[in-house]
Image 1 (spheres, rainbow, N blue to C red):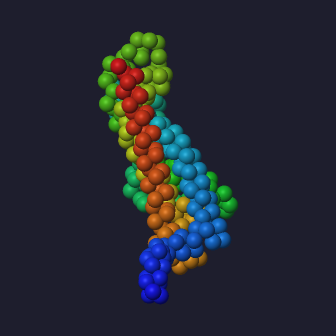
Image 2 (tube, rainbow, N blue to C red):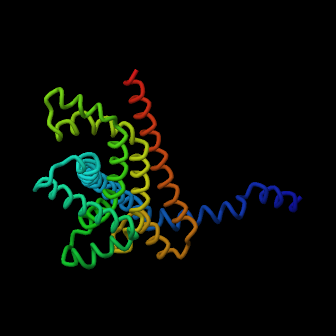
Length: 255
């Protein structure tokens, strides 16, 4: 009888592996409110990404306009100051694209933090500048490809409406190019979210760094890293869904 009661209680007991996971979950996230490292890190990651995207798009549009204007018009321009300025700006943009796209983002971040802005105490600003400048190089080529895909008749249509070259680019060409390259821009945005995971190299408490701090306190790597990976996955799925909705609305607006 005693053996049967013991066996019954054992059957009701929680399996050992579930009990272990429960204990590890408590130690990693509940004890000492360690989950707040992930919450604060996620907030920092989103702030860096948001402002870096704005900076990257601004730099990318400017660089793309310079590159595409050079490719489309420089051969037909008369020798003079205007042609010299355009060639000079194009050379600077090409140098910027070559350097940024040819070096790792983590190295750029460390150079920005430890050398260029070594005296700055605003780590968020430094991270935004580093990631924004890096993203701008890729956005520039994405937008340039979209501009080059627009038929030259659109430029002529803009001129017939009385627009100058800059007005034609702003009101006619850029909106069409943006619609064409939206999936590529969305992919760059998603890549940028994941690239910010190297912010911890300069001591910024981002999402990845938050998970690493938990690991250093508990000496357990599985749950903190799994939580960080899961959060990144949810963010990427969420924004991918938003982009697909936007693409669908843009397609419907063309009908």
